[in-house]
Length: 542
Image 1 (cartoon, rainbow, N blue to C red):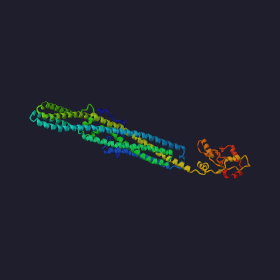
Image 2: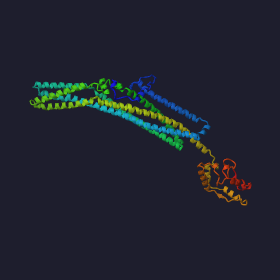
Image 3: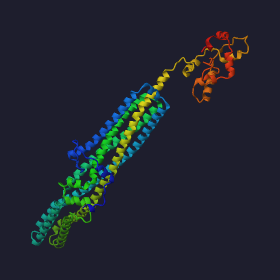
Image 4: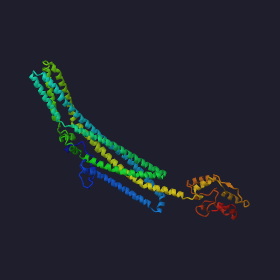
């Protein structure tokens, strides 16, 4: 039996998934036979979903422990958070999370498309098979109706016309026997009505579920991509509220990823159980509707297998041929004697011709090649594209869970680094003359003060100790900004000579100011007397 089946070979991933443990909720091991109506088998698939739920619990527990350790670290560790090495770690973690998330979304789109293609092929094959069975049922019903009503009425009228001729009446009785024989053969064919309704219901329900499954995964994929992009935007803009919002959505996406993983694995395992031995399942399902010989004929469709309808179709054909021969004889010999019988005889001949055409169509529809092709197309769609797509969706769920776990670890550190920078900025002394913000506030309100250049120019003449008062303009600030650009754009006041700033150096003997002034400048400043310092007030006081 199995040697005749060469068209369908289950893919290797279905055998791999079929080997997954099948355990019910009472932890009892089960066989791997596909039995969707069995309660224990349903529990074995639910158990796989519970394993994914346990993975989600472990993942959340690890994240909770990590966040607890991060919140309970010592203050010196908090200061180390602002170092460049930790900033690089957060940056690389964000890059890794974004990259993995993009890969996961790409894999998810491909898997969602593959699964949808497989299910579409399944529903198309089911509808096509249903159309074939509906055609068979229509032909059988039409032929039987013509034989039971139309032929019977014509034979009754001819019996009245040929009442005086016993040989003609005997011919009519023989034709009635042939018609009853045809009806008997048609009644011997299986009743396809119930099977047709079942196929239609399965196809409709499958298409309905698949549409919402595809739409749900599409929304999940878009949600994951948006969360990753917005989280990267929050890190780039250093927005704490945006990072906090994305952290909440990241937890939601993590839960959805594990939930989809459990659903995908359970569905893939159940489908693989069917794909490993689909013939056995279908024969068990149809044993109360159609005989096993007919199901076996359509499932395997081998040239060595006998056609279970061959005998009925042969008897049908012979009966029609015999009846047509009898009608030709009556048209030849009875019509000249009974002209009124010609119309009924021609109607019977037309009915027999239509029945013969229906016989040829019925023979073609009952051939195993059409339904077997639909069956194989359905298997290819489910077991190849469908299960393969579910595996890619499972990989998407794992990658998404990994990406969001990394993101949930990186966001708190980034959030704390942003908070530490803002706190350090708020702790700066506004009165510090070397604070850039304080300097901008000073230059925005000009005051009269002595410049250091006036002192250096007046030291050559001790008779003029009253230098003119100067109003500070934007020139010192412009000069400072130019010097800042020369020093790499880093506003470090302690490394820049105090040229034209109107304030004395804090100390000419301390680092780094010792190397900031020329020897002439230091000598000029040190040669000032106490009287000069008292005269010019506290401008030179440190």
